Image 1 (spheres, helix red, strand yellow):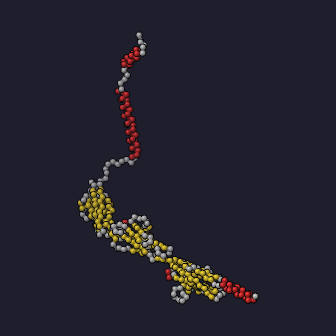
Image 2: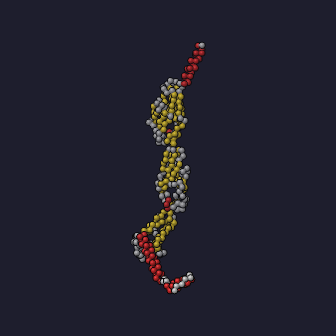
Length: 350
């Protein structure tokens, strides 16, 4: 009987030892965003008489580089929160690695550990790659936006600060590869482009790229009095403008004078390294006919009413003339017709 009791007590002691055994738990993986804060969770049981130590396995030591020693932080970026969790501020890419939570039990006089892997998410400022430095009107141009990021980024494109629609007819873009293909590039594309890269770590925008498109001359015509001036624009710059009036070339000048007594055909011509361009306008004397009254609606109504009254008046005159010219009744014939009628009826008059 005594042996049985001894065995029973021994089993009770072993079970108590097992139940009181130190148990440490952490997440297997944790993500942190570069520049932000993150917390590596760690819990243990039993919850009394324990010292907490955190270290990172960066290869600097057999046990790694210590961050928390006996509940005390060794750097201002680290702090012990809750029961045994590690709070890390201003996360850096260099913080990525395996973190070890070590708990020493003063009751069991032994320690237990658990490891969590920290993955840092980040994104760099994107850059725009331009395959060709010489872009001529009519070309097909490929712009590539790329950003080093973890995880991989997606992309959006902007023109003059406004987002380019995905269904644009000439701008075809890929959110995955960052490619922007511009078909039939022209003077309207001689402006700024930028892109934005995004992932779970955030979004960053590139610097603006000014697309240097070479395009042939265009013109804006300005008329002041009888002076005509052609203002050219193009890329590369335009040295001079040649004027033609009614097909006749004019001496080199920045503007020409026309005779406003008759129509004049004015043509501007210029060229640059991208090609040639011209514009023609016809200028005629002003119309000297009397101006039409402003209230055309009332005038039209008066005209219609006048026409109706004239029609009614003419109809009345025609009716009167018709009645006046119509022959009157023949009384002689009527008397004779009456006598014939009485005779035929079997009666006579004495």
